[in-house]
Length: 288
Image (cartoon, rainbow, N blue to C red; front, side, top):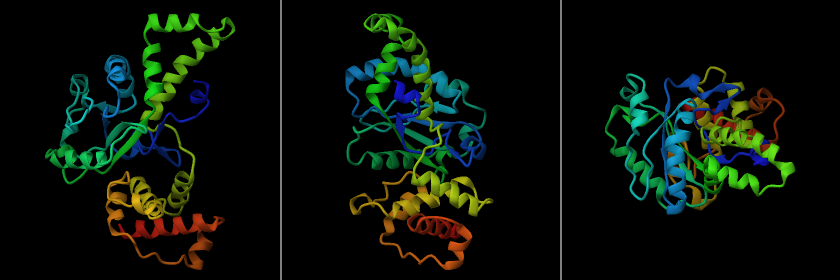
């Protein structure tokens, strides 16, 4: 709990409705909420019995204010259907244009071919929501055990029983940390934190070099440059998060031009590996 509230991500993968590039929220780029699809394949029945009521009685309104409309949870079949609450609060005209779709999947429990099932399900949705392909669909992974613990502790009786088992010196800290941990986990589910790492650094560099480019196009170009460096077995059309990067993975190996000296001078102080990735992403961005 302390590590989560101190900044450790409980969810992995980006982007989401809260993803930021150079301080600019994804919601500024795309009108309206995202569609969130919970995938419970691989989640044990006992865990689902705890998570489902917590998600749809307690967490769903909190995800709504984080700009995520929820669909009913998936099991083995991938069939996308909005919840009753999502239908009630859906903005007028929301179905009439493509919207980003965020799959929330259990970390470490996905089966081979699950991404293929996502793609097939989206292709069967012959409605304007995903007509001609959404601008973006993404997979974020959640920590099942952590969410189950938070869901259990949201029950007053469970929380009181757990609290009595603590050292009395720790009860005040527990009372303070529990709501903060819940907020941090929900934020992580929608990608609300600026994630550290090579991808975020490259996003900053490429968006600085191309300030007028659409942020989603920047993200896709950077991810394509990273996708080229995946291991052979990961180079599939389903390995990437953005549509452009997923499609580009079909064509391996892709010819890559050496970074010219004038670009290196324009890019400033970057390590050689970073410079190569930023140059490739800039070249891909120019092709759009």
